[in-house]
Amino acid sequence: MWAWWVDALAGRLTPKGERKPEEVELAPGDVHVVTAPLPAGARVAAIVAATAPILPEQLRWTAHVTTGAGGRRQVRVAMARKTAIAAARRTSTRIGGPAVVARAGDERFVLVEGGSGSTPAARRTVVALLGALGLILTIPLTTALAAGLLAANERRAIAAVDNGAAQRAEVQRALAERLRPALARPTLSALAAEAIAVLPAGGALHAIRRDDSGLVTIEIDAADPDRVSLPGFRRTGQWPVTDRGIRSRFEARP
Image 1 (spheres, rainbow, N blue to C red):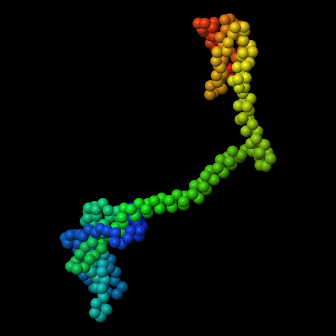
Image 2 (image 1 turned 135 degrees about the vertical axis):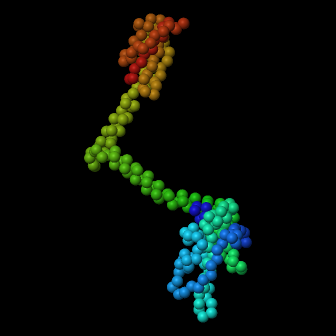
């Protein structure tokens, strides 16, 4: 259906001289033509039902009605199996599919309308225009959805607090509580300065680092590790270092 609409719109952009509609003509053996009088008030579908060689629902048909002498009307109905029409259309790969026609003498019956015969360039232009139009049309919808989601999130966040000043105070308190650990956390520079201040004679700060969980690790080299003590930190390791005595590791989450 999408291809049909694109082809139909592109046909309007394609100059008439460049349109190349395609049609497939059914073989005479696949077409059944009936001629019958058409009284006033009579329905062509009833004539089809009465004259069809197979069940009418298995057919596609089209009719030409003419008026003769004395105002008498006559109908010419061309019928073909739906399976024969489908097989004929499968022979084409054109956008929109070919028209399917039947002939009885000089008379031409169109059983299925075909594509417009648009050019590839026109179809590409239509697809680009439809894509741009779709994007423009979805802007109000996406804006409304985003606003709705933001509003819903805000309502859930403040559902447990009072309105007005009490609500603002609660939000500010929650924000302060969330930020307080980060603001109160001592910097590595400050911790390094504290460690250096309590080093024994000949001791040296080897490394200090903090991981993503906030765990601070300090490594200190000293000839006598028992004299190394960092307030607030616990010793978690100790090993000899070739030219700097003993290295001690301390850890804490200050």
